[in-house]
Length: 161
Image (cartoon, rainbow, N blue to C red):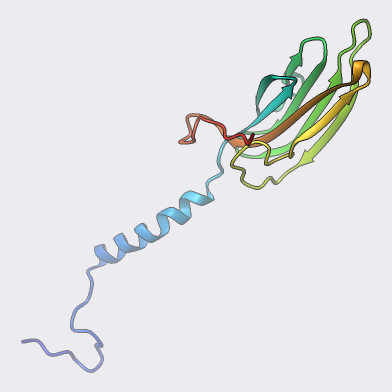
């Protein structure tokens, strides 16, 4: 039977490979969290009983911005500048679409990063209500930065009713 030496508090020592394995298993989740997650802007517009969706990935070109029209009523335009892993800023513009007039801007907001992690629409903007003077119309929209589909993220978007 082996007796421990006074300078050795335990009778056994772990091999180096076991210590390395323990270190990797503890550090792997921490290292995975430091990698930036690719996200895209997802917005939902609600007008009357219709729902419209807008998805916009980040990029360097503001002219490639996505727009969604509520025919003859409203338009939502989203400019997302940066990269999917690092979004610098987002500009959301809402317009009133009149019958014979050019689009009239109702609201424009610019959001600057860094952006906190978000789980569902409307975590980024909250529910925004815009009103058009033409016939007293109202549209509601909300947006969130959600993980890009195919990156291990859920493809379903959670939307509160």
